[in-house]
Image (cartoon, rainbow, N blue to C red; front, top):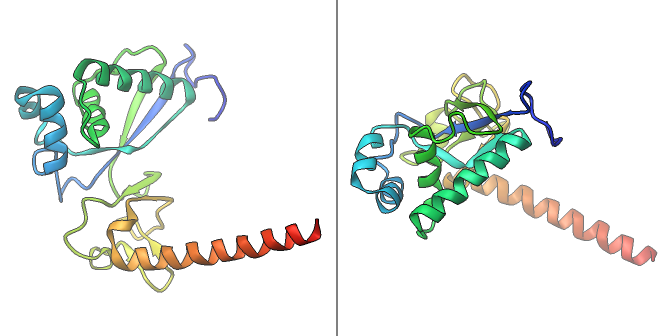
Length: 193
């Protein structure tokens, strides 16, 4: 929903979070995520959530009112922690999720967390799957040049595809083709002026 209203009868909206692969990594196993949590919130908070699945801050969706409330909570995390590490926003994101900061927040009816690679998830987060090529995971169909979910269906939105060499090559070729087409049509439009 793109309008200013919310979906709930009280004017609140739904927020959607998307997990990284829980088998491949968790907060404690990820040197990046562990550092962001420890730096911002300390060892005690880290110890409480280190076994939890990483929730990707780069793929957050929701109704406008819920997103506005979420963003206020994220800014407050910075104001309180002063964490300036590159990527610390993901530490904030996981903290507010696992410490239930958004429960009963004005503007948020509920938060829905989606499992990585699920056919019912709008986003397929791929960063944690760097141990081998996506094709070996069964998530890259080179013939159709598509990223797949675990059930073989096509992923609607793919995040962090650039971690896979074969996929990156295909995307770069597509991008180069689109840029060349755009330059050609732009030049033709200028000539007509």
